[in-house]
Length: 302
Image 1 (cartoon, rainbow, N blue to C red):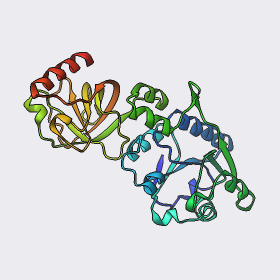
Image 2: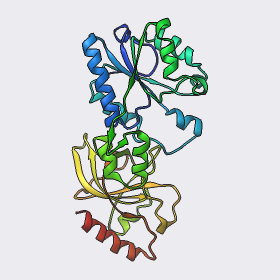
Image 3: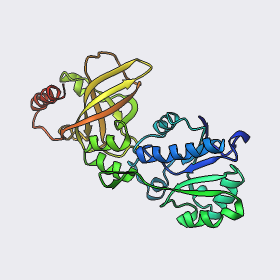
Image 4: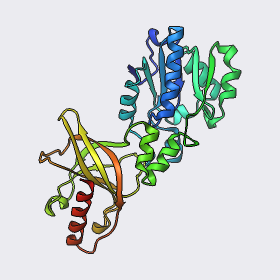
């Protein structure tokens, strides 16, 4: 898969079939759409790619800090597994947000990419003030010689699978439900940063990872699987996500204790898969009470 971070598209990827959207999470619904588009591309002997955004438009407009189901890096990795021919990542900023709906079609989709088939969801909106929609795309088909395909959503247990639903599941601690909608465990990936080493002092050393722009999961203790391919690391562990009320911290943090490892992982990037919600975060009267609870939590996870 070729990744473009600008609109200088190679001739081989023009005259192609493209899907457009945030595709945050690349969940089972997204995968269904992409596989449908791939099938058409194969039939037409055409290349197939995806247009997505570096910054999710809603995050840009509403200045939301914690919103993403996955990082951009994780999105690229998930899309690579689906064997797309190319991926175009558009930097969503003030200049881009002011492009009219018709100019987005004429100057980007047609002039820059020369698309022949476009796959979008029925609620797709685009252009300045979100004035463009599927009716706009349909209206401009004859003028610009492309065809629009409106994708049908995928449902599970009578609910439409969406990134919004997955965010809600994660926020409520329904981590198993989120995994079923994603088709994989939900994970947080980040670099291990230096903490106050309180865990080490009480006998439970942890790797600390900032939550960045991820949607905030329900604060509490989780059973986790920690991975780092370069280090050939794949170990179970226990994690606390929250503000650590016992120590009066304000910024949410992921603290993970990895079972059976004594390596210094400072500055290493870890992928922490959340497997099960164990209990809510709570404040303890003393460090001794905290230690007793941690022992119980580890016993339960193991």
